[in-house]
Length: 123
Image 1: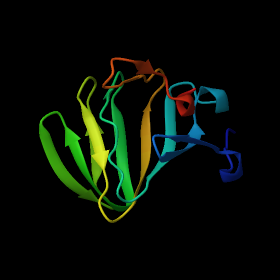
Image 2: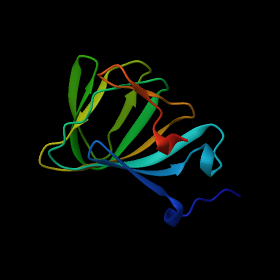
Image 3: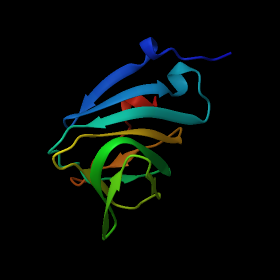
């Protein structure tokens, strides 16, 4: 039975944000990836696109989310559905935000400079 203890989670830092990886192919998941993201207060997230649908469930704090040309405030309990190819950004004000994120294996992110990354927490 694949159980991933919290102590086995792998922590990554990128753009001032912490990604704590739990489920990914390197930890026994064949189809899904899951991690906790922690974005500090006063952080302007890097806008990006994704190649796989991504779901974020806000577990604490609040943030401003931009999807395409629409923006909206989110707080704990809200769920964000990021469609493939949509420009997505998440920025915090005076409060940090934490969310649980899931996506399918193979996610890549397109950055504003035209580069593409495969986040290490999805491998």
